[in-house]
Length: 194
Ligand SMILES: Cc1cc2nc3c(=O)[nH]c(=O)nc-3n(C[C@H](O)[C@H](O)[C@H](O)COP(=O)(O)OP(=O)(O)OC[C@H]3O[C@@H](n4cnc5c(N)ncnc54)[C@H](O)[C@@H]3O)c2cc1C
Image (tube, rainbow, N blue to C red; front, side, top):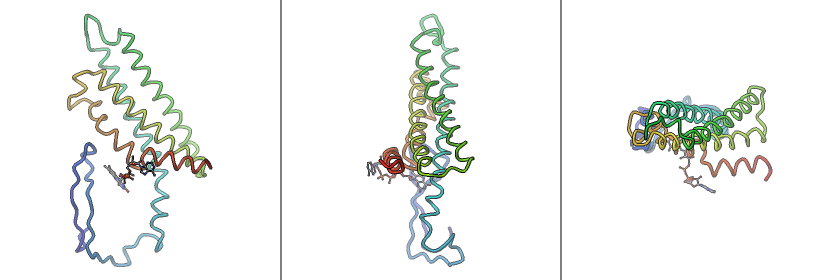
């Protein structure tokens, strides 16, 4: 990082504030050969080897964020009183919570299945397609739950300090980073021979 010719420009982001994402500039940088990682010309292959694990980890993260939103929304619904009753007494509110639970349950089952397959050594095309589609499903679950939780918390959901507000700001990077949705669909289709 101290090599002459390397400089950084800080990027200001919607979320992920604790991650110091920056644009890197390389101006006639010379790197001694002893610092090379892996074989010459094999860099992209090495990065590709990391993609599936990253996408699977992001799926599990998205699931956790979704669950955190449901937990906060449920606690709020039990506590918050409007028009003489707790929110949880309203059918519309219970349905919203169950819409969240339904997506979380399906994502949980899929994460469990794909990680068990990984532990069993599966890395084939069909498994890669599952990872791509799971990442889309999990991050859509996160998006749905963040949106539903903020709505259920009402004005409080718009306030810094609530979990749901924070998760709401973290949704898009999960849907774009590590392979954007559209690219995940294309890759899955290719792996499935479609
Ligand atoms: C906060 C943050 C941290 C990041 N950290 C890292 C990191 O550590 N390492 C790293 O390597 N990358 C990192 N990225 C980069 C990230 O992986 C890319 O932003 C992401 O893969 C999307 O690429 P792009 O931004 O170039 O979008 P683009 O490729 O310009 O795509 C723009 C939009 O068009 C869609 N699109 C593109 N091509 C097609 C097509 N052929 N058909 C249909 N739709 C298409 C995309 O899906 C997307 O919705 C980070 C990004 C962010 C925001």
